[in-house]
Length: 409
Image (spheres, rainbow, N blue to C red):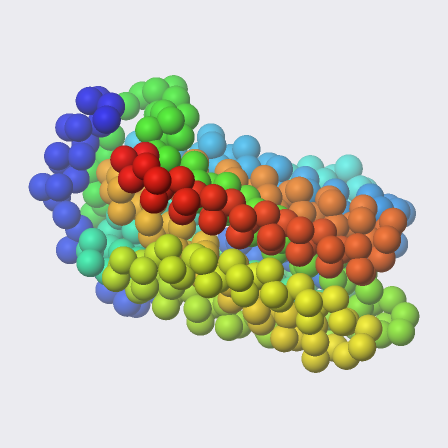
């Protein structure tokens, strides 16, 4: 183990967090959901944006990809600051700047301004992960998995409601209203956090910023569980993004011709994912993380079968959405719970290191799914999603085999 990390670990052991109230945890979940929703609003609005700014169907996925790429960049540059600076001030500042970025998107007069605005929104949306890291560091060790699961459930609900709210507002007031309403809700979140977020924060590292960033890379080298769980995150969120980015395209076309409100409502079918998130954290607290992962990955692979029958019945799609969201979020919460337990003094850096994989996977899924849909239609999208899901299951099985053969790894 890196000896430079030992003083921080000893300090962490002497100052174990006593826990946070459920009310504060719920506020973290709400604000996390508001922040992460900003990078998913565009998905049910793709065709509206494409029509207004004259962007082709095959290229419209770049709207989501731009946001995800910028999100990934700031995961490395901004989230680790939570181990260096006061997280309370950092969170409030990021959310305040997000308000301005959302207004820019909502008033964009050209595709260039739209992309710039979305890029800034993506950069600042990483406040979601600072909130997760803050919740994990404030939680008592015995309930860390539960608290992480609770905050993550807020993120899942934010993602689901992003599509529902975006679709409804688009039909009612146009796509621009989505971002202006989000700016207003974010302002309310900033006010609530200013009053309710604990002023006392866990002890910070004394590392300089440049050393702090390098230590993120050192975590990859030192923690095999981070590397393994990061790859799993990349694969499951590639599958997640493949479905949710491309789903609007067949549903808005013949024979369905659904409104944006109806398309957004499909996100509510994935509420089971939010319900599973907290439960997965509790199972990880009990030492059942690997079993939860294996079962969830099997469900993820199976979900693409009913999804592929979208043209037979929309009920098949609803079933597939429930299964896919449940499995992805269960693996995601389990990943975080297992990683945070290893190095509690480095929550923000661990979050950054892990979520980079998530963002890369989401970006790849967004751009690949729209390209595949343009070439092969919905069945091609389903084969792509099933292939990525199968790769995640095979990788997990390979890791379990290697671990059993060499437990010291």
